[in-house]
Image (cartoon, rainbow, N blue to C red; front, side, top):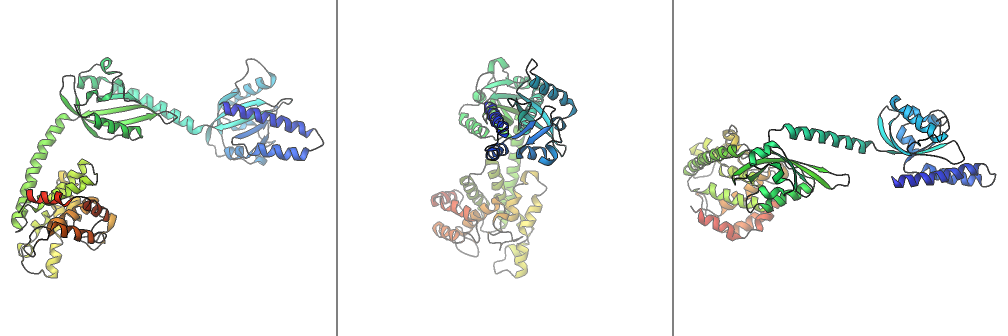
Amino acid sequence: MVSHLSLIGVLVLVLTLFFLALKREKKIKELFAYYKALFENQAQAVVIEEEDMTISLVNRKFEELSGYSKEEIEGKMKSLDFHPPGEREKILTYHTKRLRKIPPSPPQVYEVEFINKKGEVRYLQVYASIIPETKKVVAVLNDITEAKKAQEELKRARDYLNKFIMYANSPIMVTDGEGRIILVNKAFEDIFGWKSDKVIGKNGWMFLPYGRKKEFERLWERISRGENLEFVETPLLTKKGEAKIILWNSASLFDDKGRLEAVVFQGQDITERKRAREELERAYRLNLRALTTALEAREHGTAHHCERVARYTQILAERMGLDDGYIKDIVYGALLHDIGKIGIKDSILLKPGKLTPEEEEEIKRHPIIGAKILEGIDYFKKAIEVVLYHHERWDGKGYPFGLSDGKIPLSARIFAVADALDAMTTNRPYRRKISFEEAKDEIKRCSGTQFDPKVVEVFLSIPLKVWQDVQKRLAN
């Protein structure tokens, strides 16, 4: 505000000199050009009003703001023409008091609604002052529409938040910008057994089990960068020391300087659901093992292949920094990658000699067959990516769809390297195995053709002993 008031002072001085200059005979043209340039090139919209509020002079910024040209405005329109009827009386009162010096003095700075040529409403902050020795008023107009909308949105958000917190059945915790608790609702108290007066002012990590503080700090770092957390699963302790599994979402509020002001955490107690899900996962894993065992029993010479390639895939995915949930889905896909071969005839699948072109086409159907087998099982929905696309190649020469580079899901690109490693380092009916060193060189050679170069780069960074140890544990 101070800078704008200073601007008014400069403008008043400039305009005073300008009008005085017009009364002189000498240097009028030179001064006129100089002061006009200053006036025209102000960063804010500026207008000069006559005693009857007719606008006598505007700069380019005002033309942009209003949508009218100088020719349409100057000497033809009054400042009241740009304001809604509900505000005109207030503005007229300010103008009259300012010129006639009627107490109390009108504010030098005030906010108004402004209607442009298109009928759009803008919000302006007006800085008005009388030009000395005249009945003219100079006004600097600052468009604060976006700031106004932000303030209104923040107010709506706070009103909504207060109502939401008051009536919510799920636990809610609000912290300040440092992570200190400033509010919890009744649902929170009921779940954790703590009354609000016992937790206000304490850090949110007080509810974490021992050793989980670092995890909370990593989450807080993401929040501080402006990220809103979605469905973050966290174990928290009740007052009695019982572990509750809470699924959290968060929303962050920042002040006008971009500083974190508050964070709202809304949770859902999924403890019982989690236990039920773990039981279901155990059942699915048993079924999964049965499926892979059946497949390996059918394909001679591939005992433990699915387990090995799943472990290789997991190691690669972890080294690539993928999240745990995605890695789990990739591993399931790796275990099930050849499930579609159940639909291939034994005469083709187990044929010792070379396959005919027709037989090769039949074999190439197994990714699609596998995907169809799994598509009705929600638990394996994301694992289907590996099953369906694991024979695609980076250069587009794979099957069944001929996808290339980034069009192939990352999970399938990772698996392709792991699968090739196991295929080359184990004996098969149609060829002898090669060493891990030779397999490493072959995968490197095929980077950018068969395999994703970035996945190969990660693979090459992992010591061969890591892969060898997996094979020893899961040997044929």
